[in-house]
Length: 98
View 1 (tube, one colour):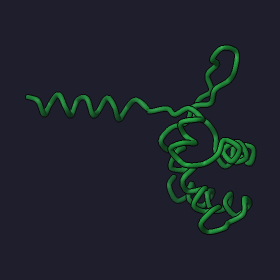
View 2 (cartoon, helix red, strand yellow):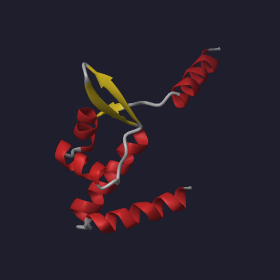
View 3 (spheres, helix red, strand yellow):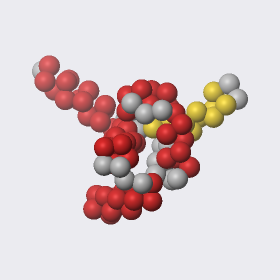
């Protein structure tokens, strides 16, 4: 009986997305907020949602965005790919995934 409850909880967790704030995403992915903003300006990354808290807009990101940030960081820092190159690579990855 416990197994059924556990699997039911897992199914609910899988359906409801986890959102990260900009600060949390930066800490988890080990990137600066400036880098994240630049990647958003270059349209390499888009927040899943934007909410308003105390009159300011707060972007929220999903686990997929976290993985995308990790890919971007790896391409930029470890492989020294420039932003236009990263854009091309991400577009190719998106096509393969979809």
